Amino acid sequence: MRMILIIRMNLLVLFVSLVFISILVSYIFMKDNIHPKFYPKVKAKCACGAVYEVGSTLPEISVEICSNCHPFYSGTEKIIDTAGRVERFKKLRDIAAKTPKKSKVKKVTKTAKKLR
Image (tube, rainbow, N blue to C red; front, top):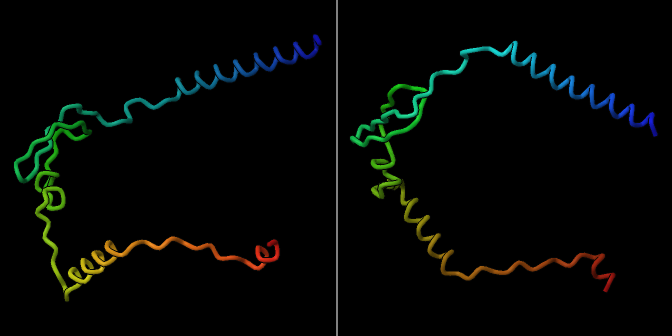
């Protein structure tokens, strides 16, 4: 019993010393000043005139398009039709929405037939 306690104590001391050494080594050999400066309040300006306040590593941001002027998000999306593909897609989508979905039927295998 004493031998087991002595072994456990030795393992605990070894583990604690390894953790302490690894922390000490990482503290001594860590590189300083490797991360860029973070600006918590940066003005992000869009070409449409919208201004957002964001956090960034850049001192100022200017973008060409944002969620206010993007056609998909603003609802002014224009679909260019090439050879009637858009109408065909919409027609097929409407037909698929009208038809009821079929339930999947499980196929009976030969082994399942033998078990019956």
